[in-house]
Length: 329
Image (cartoon, rainbow, N blue to C red):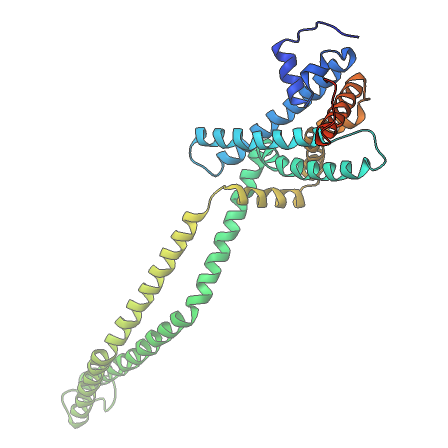
């Protein structure tokens, strides 16, 4: 049956998406709608892939226009892959299921990967909260690593400062005790109980003066050691602060951080996990539907037309290769 049917632009576009030949499909009345359905499914998958990739690139590039351009580019690649998968599906032949399994695996892989940015978008608020908690844990772990790395040097300088301070404190206590003994000896409240500078008082005066000299010598000798320890402790503290600030500056809500946060959220919340896997299945079906529709929908007159034309073309080419006279096709 021949018809002078003229498809509109929308039908031509949908048929192109379904990889159908417009010349042959014009004469296949029933198959027009079938291939339009397949074309609409491919259009939906193409649109979903473009949006998913645009959102994906918006998390890694600063410009929204660049993310949109890259999303269109990757969406186009997914479209070409889908058209290649659909074009290669034949519903006849004994080994038809083997290439179908390969195509389904490929479509499954593409769908699973595309589901990730879509799920990040759907669980955006929850993932941001979890990412903030994960970043806090990372900051605590980094601080613990810094404490462990600088602990030996810091303990050494703190011990140096403590020992020097204790030595000075001992000299100071000795000086104070000697001075108190001298004062008590002179006012008659201690020692010989005699007021005035007696021989014992003079001896205690010399001991107090010697203790003061010893204290001053200890201060002059050990104070630089204390100052050196304080300086090094301050340097260590500054280094830790600089490294901590640099690490905190690396904290972000980038793609990998959000994917890890989503994994942690799934592990910790059964309600989120159930809806996550449900959405993964749903989003993968979006990618698989064009391929499944092509396989599940019955073949009609279009397939007969296509096989007939292809057979005639092969016959014509074979006759040309043998230099045989051919009939016009």
